[in-house]
Image 1 (cartoon, rainbow, N blue to C red):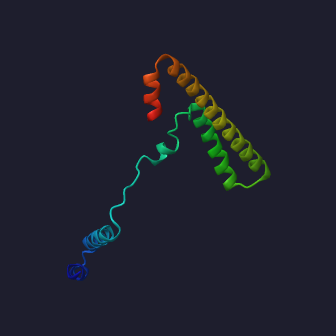
Image 2 (cartoon, rainbow, N blue to C red):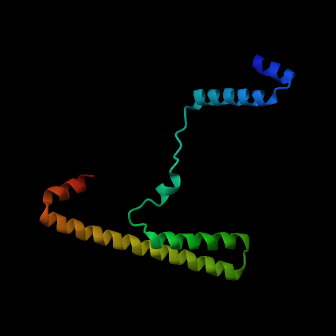
Image 3 (cartoon, rainbow, N blue to C red):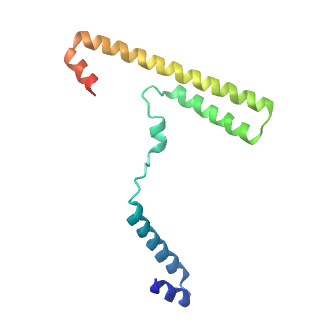
Amino acid sequence: MDHLTVNVNNGQVENLVQDFSQILTSAATDVFGKVKRNVDFKNKLTNKAWFNEECQSVKKEFKIKRNFFNRNKTDANKMAFVRACTKYNKTKKKAKFKYKSTEGHKLSKLAKSNPRKFWKILKK
């Protein structure tokens, strides 16, 4: 801290700010520990096997309508937003159902044709 006060008197503000932020960062790390940040957060939200291209396009349209409604709250915009929300939910539901159905058929066939592989998949 003495070094910081000397820099203030000398007019080296940039060095003062960098040194002070390093002191704060190291003190916070000592107290709270290092925070592990999830860099790939956006992909984790939509990294479902059933989330296909159709879901992505409908989600994009939903977000556009939602943001437009939040900026301009009119009845027409609200109706467009609600329709987009309903369409997005239906699309997700259909995609999940289709995915689960095809996976079920694959597992059923695998159980009959290759039981060893079937049980390895189930253990995952």
